[in-house]
Image 1 (tube, protein in one colour):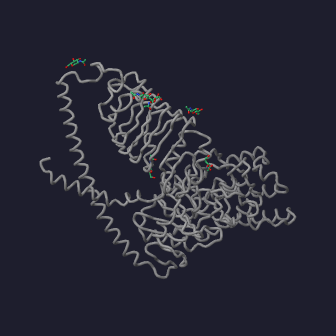
Image 2: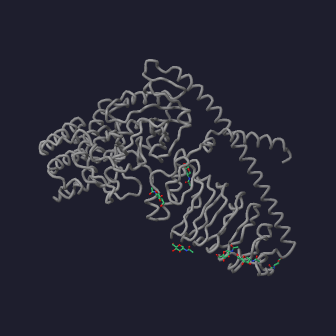
Image 3: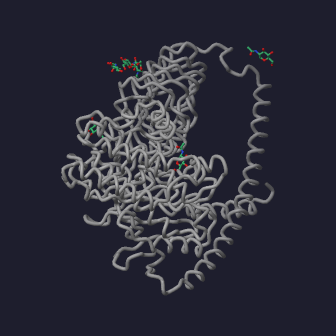
Length: 626
Ligand SMILES: *[C@@H]1O[C@H](CO)[C@@H](O)[C@H](O)[C@H]1NC(C)=O
Ligand SMILES: *[C@@H]1O[C@H](CO)[C@@H](O)[C@H](O)[C@H]1NC(C)=O
Ligand SMILES: *[C@@H]1O[C@H](CO)[C@@H](O)[C@H](O)[C@H]1NC(C)=O
Ligand SMILES: *[C@@H]1O[C@H](CO)[C@@H](O)[C@H](O)[C@H]1NC(C)=O
Ligand SMILES: *[C@@H]1O[C@H](CO)[C@@H](O)[C@H](O)[C@H]1NC(C)=O
Ligand SMILES: *[C@@H]1O[C@H](CO)[C@@H](O)[C@H](O)[C@H]1NC(C)=O
């Protein structure tokens, strides 16, 4: 401490380094860009077990400055500014860090519920003006983080089971505080704000004493009884402050060193990137605009347009966040922000994406553009407005909004998906096509329907980009028997995923491998095997299609195909080409049985919901954690 200049310069440098951290810039985005706030609310919801909220907090949360779609939520500019859930009988605990990501929160009320546990922290909620937690079962101390809220006007904590002492509130803004009917103890701190309150703010706390309460404090109540202890207190505080100060200096110094090293590295990497980019093969059918690369030269937008357009977080997918971008009335896209990638150079990344560009099949969701920088990798897809097949199979079951998903429509979905996979297997993206799955993540939530209900398979081609530990946890093909046993996947793993997908189509049951978190599911493969062995085959099929006239023989044929695809041993599974042919046989057979109604060209007639349901999915990877 003898060298203040040294310390100041370190401090300044450390602050500068922190300011240049690109991650901080994210806080300035106007929208809940990557669904962080939405996820924070959904995490909160999962603690409450409240059926009304569970059904209400779905689809869009806030859209620009439209009134919020979620009960009890207030929004400004797409950010959550208020949570008011009063008199709802909410029970459960709220995690201490539940509000960490709701940085714009201004009003918070859980008045008159049955929430228990400790009061959450408020260290990241500097905009809070009103907090009402009264009439719950909160216990433990009043958190000190409340002292840091400089705009707090009203704090209602009465009628809980809070213990310990009252923190020394002294924010000038604070007009109303009520801590009555708790289990607080000790003297009421001698601050201007607390002393100016009405005594009824402190009533019914057995251990609380001193003004403004009418109960005087006796000597035993925490007042230090001799100057001696006073002195030693003072000394120990001094030492503690000193140590903290030292630690801080060291920590700042370390942070500074790391940052500067990182910045140097990044600079170097950027230079290398630039050189590489200049080398990009001019023969490729890709036009460069800024750093956003387009697959189709007609697309007239740039990265800035994307960043300033209205964005709606679709939630977190398996490999990063997705959000929906509306450039103008006609142009809606889905941007997928990739995370957890293999450490690829821009060149390698490019190579993989070039391979994806070459893929054109009517049943594959086309990649429109991509963006690559050291900090950010974006894939930009068409938005498929009619949702995904997972929702089509399982959504709105048992309600009057359910639109039946008919057998013929399911059959043509199976056909389209089989064709897309067949195409992927014939045009492998990977340089080692026999040791990777070409799709890798086929499941019903990744099969999308566009506005004409054309079937579009999404989320393909990421196997070669995603780091293996992440892929093995989150991709469907890594759940296949061969990966479980031999730690190997191959195009046959896609065949297995396809079999599971068809079983889901036929049974209407949620299958283990693609189920969203928290949804009941069955291991469809074993379940169907058991059903066939025990000869209750008829009960296998989804009741919604089993009742259809003349559907049964075709359904059994398709079931046989699916069971073959699900064979434990990859060698016994058919090739996708064979699967396509067999499904075409089934279609032919059903059409003959069906007096030639000719319903197989599309899924259209019966699958467009009467009231368009807004389904959070879009550009692939539709399985958000809800
Ligand atoms: C806050 O958001 C970040 C980024 O989305 C996430 O990693 C983190 O887990 C969130 N924290 C909480 C407590 O929800
Ligand atoms: C949620 O409830 C509010 C108020 O009851 C209603 O206006 C809103 O439409 C509901 N949203 C959904 C998605 O059900
Ligand atoms: C508290 O909430 C319950 C519902 O949980 C309601 O019945 C009761 O009237 C509420 N009490 C007050 C004082 O608002
Ligand atoms: C305290 O407030 C109550 C009602 O809130 C009022 O009846 C009472 O007179 C007040 N007491 C003082 C000392 O201001
Ligand atoms: C504080 O809360 C108690 C219990 O709900 C109530 O009786 C009292 O009037 C309140 N005091 C003030 C000042 O709001
Ligand atoms: C006051 O301090 C002395 C030691 O200095 C201690 O023995 C005594 O118990 C204390 N009295 C009270 C009431 O805390």
